Length: 149
Image 1 (cartoon, rainbow, N blue to C red):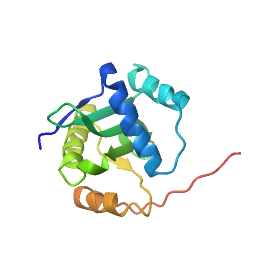
Image 2: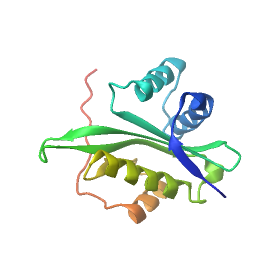
Image 3: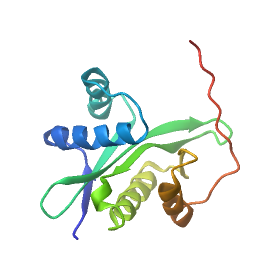
Image 4: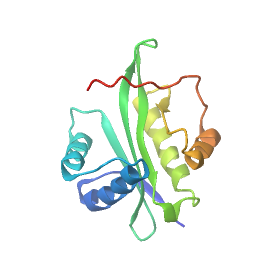
């Protein structure tokens, strides 16, 4: 299978939306048009440091997506990368799509002069974690969330 990875462009909206619905379903999160419009706006807002990649197969169909952004690391006094979302359509998992997305993410991080890209995932995302263990270092950090409602 031939996979190409590129920055998302406005013509990719329908494919991106379908992939993002799959991602939200995987995590059991509700998704609606208002949320999709907001995220789409972030991706194409030049004032946001929020980026998106799309992986396509040889037929030009979207098979995976990745959202990432710049964030400050105060202890380093530097900007670093943060991977927010990664999703591969189930029927294309195990075909190297994720490797191609991470290869491009690494290049993007080098272009931005980020020393690293960090991310979190669900404890029960065993398949994803197996890939992450192969491609990256597991850190010592635990994640907490302060709810404000």
